[in-house]
Every structure is written in C-alpha cells, then in structure tokens.
Image (cartoon, rainbow, N blue to C red):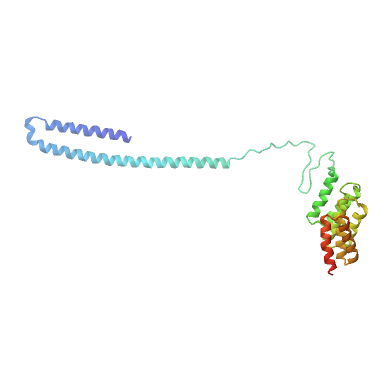
Length: 253
C-alpha cells in the first residue's frame, strides 16, 4: 500500500511539472502572467510534496502498529496452545484390567486374596567356597568387627580343619582377641596354632604373639621362652627380628 501511494505521488508531481512547462512555453499573450504562474506552480508542488511526506509518515506508523498487533496475536496463540496442552487429560499408561468373578476386593487394611495362594519359599542360602568363607572372615577383621570375625574364623576351622587356610584362621582368631586386649583368650588361640599346625606358615608369628600375650599378662618367664624359640627356630624371619627387639626390652625390666 505504501509503495502504491508513493507511485501516485510521483505521477502527480510529474503531471505538475509538465503543466509548468506548458505554461512557461504558452502563447505570447500569456507572457505577463508567466512569472506569477510559475511561482504558483512551485508553491503547489511544495505543498503537495509536504502533504505526501506527512501521508507517508502516517502510513508507516499504521504499518508499525499493525506489525506489533500481529506479533501479539501470534504470542497469544502460542500461550493458548500451551495452556490447552497442559489442560488436556493424559491417557492412562495402562488400560484398567477387567474385573472377573475370581477377583477379590482389596480393602485398606488387607492385601488382595487370590485362590490357591502359596507362601513365598524361603531364600536359598548362598553357599560360600572355603576361600570365600576365609575372605569374608578376614574382611570382618580388617573392618574391626572382631567378634564377628572370631565367629567366622572358628566356623571355618570347625568346617575345614584340614584346609590349607585352617592354621591362618586359627591364628587370626588370636589376633582378634589380642586387638580386643583379651590377652588370655589370645594366648589360648595362638597356642592352638603351635599345637595343631606346627608345620604351618603361621608358626613363627604364632610363637611371637604367644610371647607378646604372655608379656601382656606379665608372665615374663614364658614370654622369654617363646620369644627365644622364635629366634632359634626361625632366625631369618621378620618374627625373629621383632622377637629380638622385645627380648632386649624384657632384659631391661
């Protein structure tokens, strides 16, 4: 629309210019009025130009308001569509199951009762291998759960007395008691290692800890005997080195 108006304005101005040329080139009888007519034409052209400019400005303002209103309409349509989506009820994820004659009513204080219902069978206990059973007991010891570890180690020894880890289990039972400062029970546990597993890999440590437990009970004589035996029978072991250190301390008492 704005372009159409501007086209009309150009045609009007062109017509006025042609009219001016015609007037300026008219017959000689009109010469006295030539100057006045030219000035009049110029004033008309200026007035028309001004009027067209004002009209262009008004048309531009109208289009600007129209664009704004159109944008608001689009925005309102989007909001309305969003509200419709939120208010539209969602379809249930699962279809309701039909009620049959065998269905039992469910009350607030009871569970649905079905025919021929059987109680759930008790869970099948997991059977651990000897290695896993030993690891479970040792993990309890490392966590500081000494009473639990003692029960698991004793269970291992009772179930697998000939297993290669039986002497280890008996030894760590003594370590649990020693950590709990139950030195009498620790002494008995370490002596069982010495008596039952004299060829086991825990023999040097069992002799050492028997000496430690005796020392804690202030039985210095037996402490010297067991510590000296470690040095004599296993001279190159770490247990022998610790035994020598402890023997020197005893000599200073």
